[in-house]
Length: 581
Image (tube, rainbow, N blue to C red):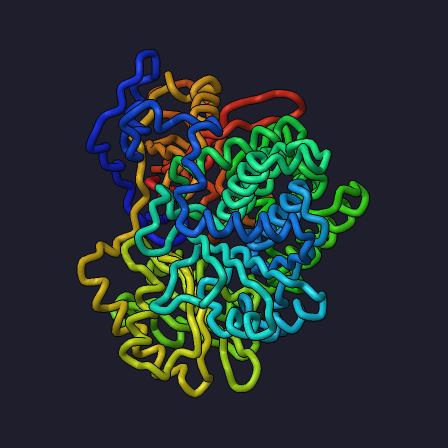
């Protein structure tokens, strides 16, 4: 039997502990939502009034007091951002939002990953000092910047940290910290991205300024901060955070603004260069088409280009910047392809592609690899091997930088914390989430780290089923394989990370199979003993020529709507398929 990529098992998604019951809703749709933890209709609501109060965030009162004083006294504020899509959108939301609220002197600094590395470091503080800023606001970073915060405080610069990354054992001595993942924080979502945190700060700040009659005193119109939600949606999806109800609301509202044409020129330009239609954009487009192009600036060059694209109101400038970002993204794809080929060769030499020799935790290093692409590489290899992976590239002064990606059940930052506790001098620094993390160490420490990583991961894998599975919401008969049900699925929820779009499975007769675009397969399928013909497509198929002539497949798929020359029809997006005949 042939199968697409790695052999997987198609299994039914477990039913929810509590069943959703909504009068008038299709029973299948109710079952789909129940299996994703939805038991009450209110959990599906996506209006802004369903967002929790920003005042639930620890430190928000002190944060707002600091920012109110800064705005009223006209102090210079500098935002220090991360160099990924979440950091870029967080920066744009922070700059635009503070200016809307009346701040007159707001600038930004984003570290170039190749010169300064991640976060607020003492070197970045020097750049801020050159701008004569009196206040630093970190966005999407800062919770681990102990040395950078100390350096800023020594220079007399206040530091206000907004972040969502998991805190370490020690916190920086900032003037105030807002992070939903602080211990004992009462905010109901620890999943909001960095862009969500700074958006919440702005909402609380606007509330306080309104109560103090700031806008009336200055003759300013109270701004509608919802105009920033297109940026919030992009950063949230691009950072692959879990789409709990808070994030589903933020993303849905941002998409509504984009589809109505009320988005910022930079977002519109990125949509256009990606070949998408703004009026039909969905969350998957943000994650797979728009986000990578924005991320390319930070991976390949300097994220300042991406941030300026999001900050500019000049449509022509934005179109030019988007074209540059698109070119950088193509360069990234080319480099990624070469690195993946080299990684597979390394794994083959290690005999790691043989299950008997496969390490529990995989470490890979090549002196020629690109720092900005190792995160994507680690993710690709993780998907292939279904094991936690760290990919390393050389840095300066005998140091190497690693990017780690994990699988469900293995908290990758906890793995690194355990290694640091057992081997205190092994890691120079590290930080991150449950599924992704970054680290640095000396080149000569790579072999002992690889051994320690494998050991710690192996201990954690004992209770985890490593067989790769594709979760299905069941089989569909011809009554559901239509445009109406596909539209229901698209419109009823915001699908994404940890709130996955519905996937179904079934056995199909292959009426036609052909290769398109070198790596993609286009099918015409039919349910057995049925006359209904259905189009299907599979992207980036390994050895596509091997599928020509197949007569029957078992496939897991999502329902999609194909639009061509004004005509709309149902199309199956094949997630996984096996050759039966």
